[in-house]
Length: 178
Image (cartoon, rainbow, N blue to C red; front, side, top):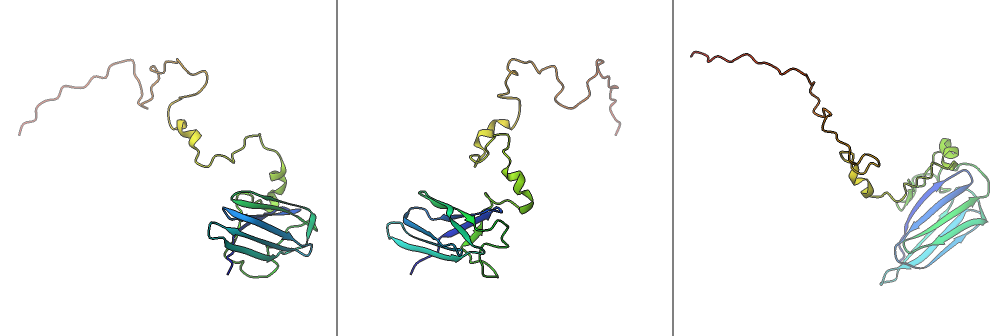
């Protein structure tokens, strides 16, 4: 009996992204049909466990304009919609999607934000910042700030107390009588 691989999906008005997450997939096969049928099959691991899925998508596809890329851990599909527009859901069938079909939050864009997502940003790619390990030195101090080396900060009051030029005088304490 075959198992179902994890399916992640997101969309834009003109395309649907489907990522089949199956590490160590052998002989992955993707078949697209214009009526909106998406099928995937592969074997995985040393036991050659069979994985497959057959999905009837919400809308029709432009098979010729679609792209499929197979990697070691994922099969990524960029499916062109036959008609531009936002789908209510990935699958034609109403109701809850199967448990192995999930939203791809890394690629997800709301309909209202599609234009902003298409615009290039400052060129800063945050895609490789999984652990934020490169930001470890930002915790305190000014370490690593260009042009700040050699500066003497000893004259700054970093303790938060008000400074005064005059020494504070305290009245002498008297021993209390018991």
